[in-house]
Image 1 (cartoon, rainbow, N blue to C red):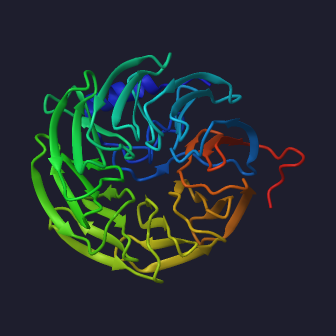
Image 2 (cartoon, one colour; image 1 turned 90 degrees about the vertical axis):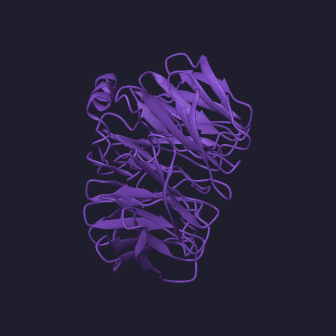
Length: 381
């Protein structure tokens, strides 16, 4: 598979962050893009079949990035792996200083990720050679996002840690540009859009920060702590919290636009945001589709386990894993089940979807890749 990732990223650097969905060729970061919307223009295979699996030495909570025909993913065995998308063969592995729950970002030939050993790493994507590392004061479970420096050319990383701090790092050198301090852990990734970065913290506050200098733009009380990442669309951050609510937060007005509440279960999943609805998992064992305009319910899809995994919307379908050990595809229109596959272990990460295939990790320590077809023994249920 020949990718155009270098040309795509060069274009992004020249025109800014005017993207909300992944291209068909690549899935370069957690939730596909800096707004963290979890959507792609490509379609899922009609009848997905398991193509390969790769076993790591620990649970895989990291979500994969797929660029230039390679899969990049972390494991609790303290390694980041690069795998061949075509057959799952290991290309290289990098030993970090702790479990890697952080989902990698691939940008301009480099791979960026954090570790529970308190470091952010930059590696050469082709070889896995370390280029730089940045030491924080706590675990890094958050996934890096990116923006442009005020000069309009230099990429900056945005990443939070368990030291209560959000960091902006120069992607080329690893030097800290600024640090923004909160009142508790930062577990989710920070969404970036229109010169602002926004995220929910374990301090129960939605923080809105200016990416230029790290200055506080505003704080909005959410009502309970947030571990999942939010997604930005048209100036609104969509994020769930542990107080059993899912919120739409108007970042300009600095207020909650609407609150969605169904049953008394937390929302620990990150949402996928389309033009008219938001799709998110809950610990109530259901996938929820919600109207973007007013927070009205559209449909729910039941599974047999918690949904802490983050759904992906691919064209007219939704792909999500559950703690019941199954991977599901449902209709975006009505929540009807279209396909499922039993992995046999909880799935906590998000899938990467590229042309003709998708990749996801599971708590059994394996990475799974699916593509078109239905070989004997792997029939859809």
